[in-house]
Structures are given as structure tokens and as C-alpha cells.
Length: 105
Image (cartoon, rainbow, N blue to C red):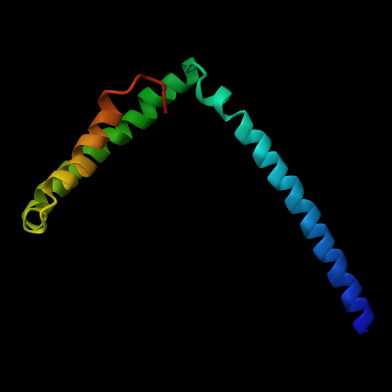
């Protein structure tokens, strides 16, 4: 009984190692092609998705971030990080919403 358990365990271990090597090699191949994917021009579909799905959510995020910044401003001033909080909660979402080119996600 113990011999069959060891044999089963060795088969499971061999299968897991083989599967992980296949998975890691595909990740390396995908990473090598990442520059080609990132540097492509945006398509009409990505522009539409950006205009009608991503930007409205980011606009809401900018408004929520601005409200959060105003509410937490006294605490940020006491902590000495009002500039960093403003940049993280308001400026960065606003730049992502209004400044970046359409379709570049």
C-alpha cells in the first residue's frame, strides 16, 4: 500500500513539474512579444471602449478622489502630506481621464 502511494505521489509530482515548465515557458514567450503589443496603434474598438467605458469611470473616480481629498484635507495637512494626497487622489486620475491619448490604456 505504501509503495503504491509513493508511486502515485511521484506521478503527481512529475505531472506538476511538467505542467509548470510549460506554463513558465509560455510566460517567457509572451513577455518577449510584449513590446510589439504595447507599441501598437490603438484600434477603433479600443478607442470606443476607452471613450464610453474607461473615461466615464475615471471621471467618476476623479470626482470621488476630489471629494475624498477635501474631506481628508485637515488630516493631510496635519500629517504633512497634502501635496502627495492631492496628486494621488485628484491629479493622477484627472491626467488619466483628460490628458492621455484616446485608446491608449
